[in-house]
Length: 150
Image (cartoon, rainbow, N blue to C red; front, side, top):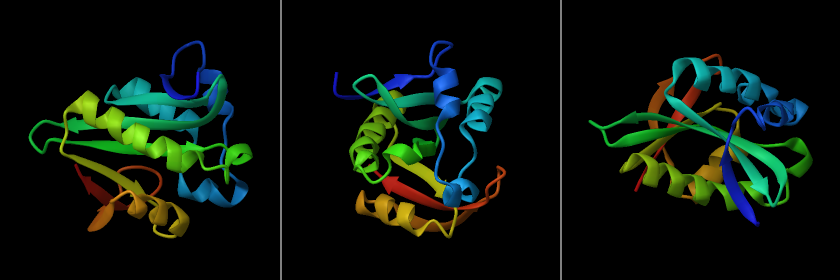
């Protein structure tokens, strides 16, 4: 099976927690352990593993759906440091956008990122996300908000 997205379950959560960004990137994103706890206890996000065949290469979390605004959030997206630079982010982001759009029937996707994470911002911009001037201070990492009109 080529690239695919699989929900995090009792069978793969430990492998997801073991994924990590590079040392220089830790300040840009919450840990996967924190994110998994958030999705389990707040019950408004879905945690997914990003796989290349049977190799777990990344993690994402999405949810926080609003029917009023017809929107949802891509709240986390990371590729493990061992797989960075291999094009996985560019290949998984469209898959995640499609999954979010289908699951939530939304017309807009939001995300936030650390304002100094220039590389991630360029990636998101290449897929049509744009800064909207808002600040996300709801979690441990304060970020600038980007949005994608679908």
